[in-house]
Length: 103
Image (cartoon, rainbow, N blue to C red; front, top):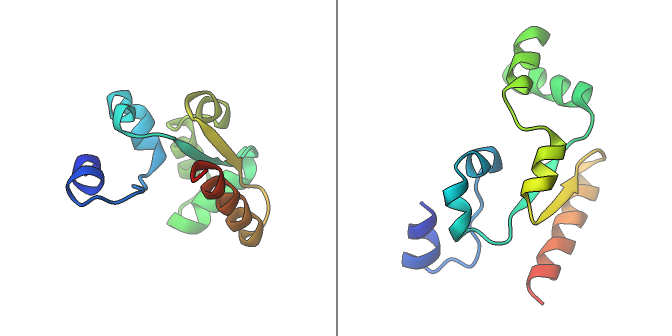
């Protein structure tokens, strides 16, 4: 998908679900920069998973255990946004990132 979108179709940006990208580190060869949008608060992450997937807390906690921590995302990414506010703030941070990489 990365090769198709970036090289065959000529798209400037390719957006992927980050957890998959970082699990297969050979894919990062074609991806630069890597932006991670993370949440630092595990409780809020669990609440969002429960709401999104309509699942019990135990299931959400198990899902979280199988993911990279926010610290791991920060370490493996070129740029990170901490998403602990509202959508407006998140969009503002994403816009800042886009301006940064387009310089």
